[in-house]
Length: 399
Image 1 (cartoon, rainbow, N blue to C red):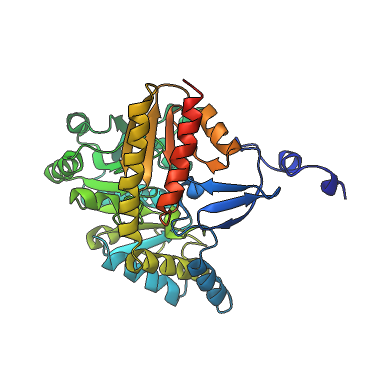
Image 2 (cartoon, rainbow, N blue to C red):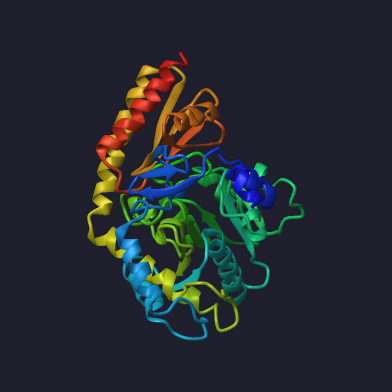
């Protein structure tokens, strides 16, 4: 067949939409924090599926749950109850502020559900004119039309006008800007406790508490998008726990399924009453197969020391990267919590990412000059040392 005589890249370019700027390797296998390409070359993965593979690649925990559930029940309609879905919902509720869970297939779908819930609750309880959601500049909430409209990055929104109305944007870490933006039309504030795609921007210590207080004073809702920073990524189960703040709505995805597609929207009992039968749905949201795996992943994060390990490795990683800040003038700042870490440069980060790839390390760059590191939460100290040594070697050649 002709496909046997042309490269993987050529086949992809022939048959698939070119919506991704892909690196010139084809990955075929993974184990722990390592992946291998079709040529047999190994790579230490500090992207982790973009904060997805919390327990690493080919996790025995995931494999066991996947195999066992696939022999029993893979999919039925949400017109019926299934035990794995209930088990996961119970775990989420028992370990969060929330009373109810809605399952979707992705972070974008979870955020879409949160936007719909906020507007429906506002219509039910605040009056017809309250529908506007205040979002942050440099935020990222997804690529559906609603979540794109809620995303505060012009480069992501470009070309899709007209976007949905009803969203305002203010700077992150600026409580006065939110205060000024609240008027009679506003029903909610929606933000990421840590802006991942926005450059690993961490809130000032008092900021989230100030946002919570302002929302309470104004009688509006607070939505936290924890799609990237949640599920242990910061060393605590949810990023907002670092700041002792409780939202009204929270969204999760990514690490929740460790590679299987799942999203979740969590909310209080009062808000959940606005989503009755027929108000929102998802054919594949929370299938038995996916929720069985997510339940196993969740239990491992809670019970196997993953959170403490993540916190310890995060401190160690940042300390090692601080050494590069001290050593090189063009390395500007380290920021992050746990194992969502950003290294800001004063030069373009793309060439550094490519050099890392050549040396067998996978990282990524966001906002042009910020190297972002999202390794599996099981990453070990010696793997962090290898990553930092690789960066040191590359930076030494840039001086």
